[in-house]
Image (tube, rainbow, N blue to C red; front, top):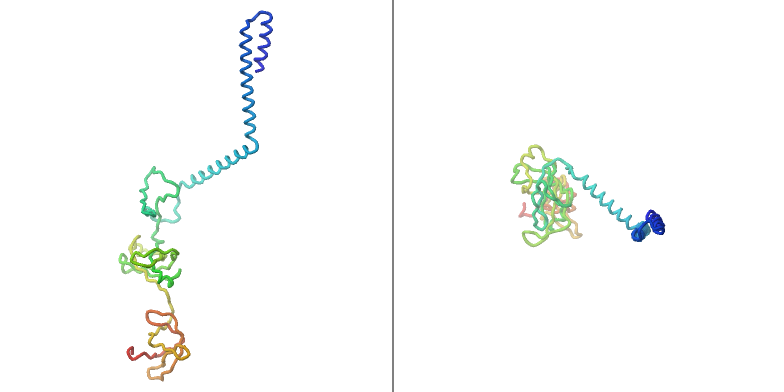
Length: 277
């Protein structure tokens, strides 16, 4: 712009002396006007650019930068997880079907995987579990930690030991009729080498759960228990077969398959009804 103005001034002086033609002055004046318009536009663009670096515009730019940095860090974290490390040594299996019956495609090299997509399952025969369903009427007898014995036709002659690990909190309708059933998960104790050769994943099994255990417990048939006028429970007892019978007050306990558990009774003989003697 400055060069054009200086050249225009020199050309006008030359025009006054008749050295140059009028059209040269007109051309420089047109060039000057064009450059003035360009200068005004550039100054307006500069002011707009400076305004974008202030106030709300600057805050918006800072927020966009923060969002971009957060997305970048997320991508970096995902990139760091490109290699999967198994928490334990085991066997890789194809994932089970998704809820709703949708099938999962077989994993192949180059296949596009979305976040959260199950790729495979990892299992170990050293950490197997058994899963069963229990009717709601029997659920009150179970609690976590109860011992369980596991048998099955696929590993006949071998009895596995375990304990109840979890009891489902949500029931589902039974497949065999009315009522609700709850899932019970049993953690099986580590298998011995001989057991590992016979036990396979997916085998059916029978679970025997010990709901109650009492060392040196004593159970009597219900017919042997009587009640007096005060509501106390007693039995007719004698220490020896030829001894004298006497009435002994006892405390009833749990109902077990053998009868009723009782407490407070010494070794000896208990009188039963004639039909049971």
